[in-house]
Image (cartoon, rainbow, N blue to C red):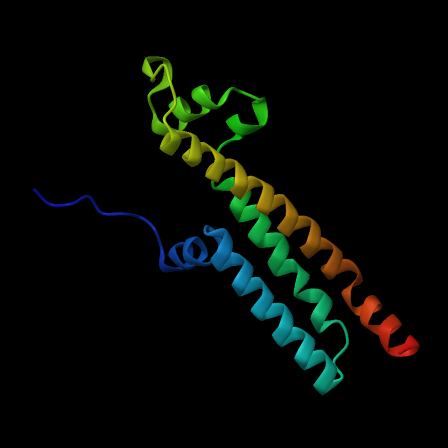
Length: 138
């Protein structure tokens, strides 16, 4: 039997690789922000640093869409695990430590995603103003 073809483009695969892992997304966002800060300071190009906040915002968005909306419903972890695993109503009666860790990891992605969106939006909106303020007062 042959394996089914996927319709995933290289673009989506790149997005998935960069942004669907919170540590990789954080490293990528920090690298872009530091590079933008360096360019703005050295080339005296205004607003490049604040534009890098958009990358944080996108990272947060992608981390949050990675999982579905069930985590916002306040369901017990047992129900969340059954949803994650696809077991639905036929799920397990008790959670193992590994299953609970999986649910916590999913929820953690959403928390990081929200933090990325907030930080990114703040940098995007006020980053260059913050730098201008620092230079005037230092």
